[in-house]
Length: 94
Image 1 (cartoon, one colour):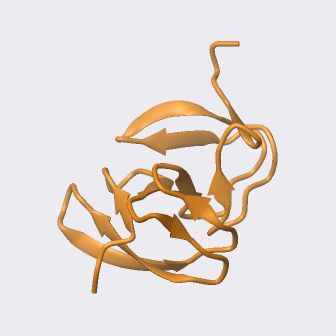
Image 2 (cartoon, helix red, strand yellow):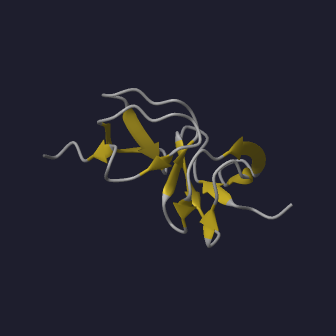
Image 3 (cartoon, rainbow, N blue to C red):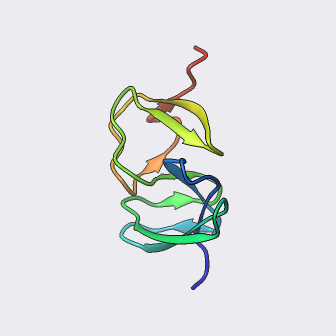
């Protein structure tokens, strides 16, 4: 099965879309680079290439982990499979 999403670190709670786009209700194959493991997720939204998808439910105030590092905080509830971007995540610097 082809890879649709890459997850860099086992601790990451988001993955990165590596195909042109993911459509709603698409069954996606996710490759975890750290341990060469594959997991699956069903998308809830259309998500373009290079954007993030939530790998689990994320509540307001939760930390987004990508590459095993804190990249921001959730400012609006994000359900597993939803698009993670500037509309629901902000940097902690401002």
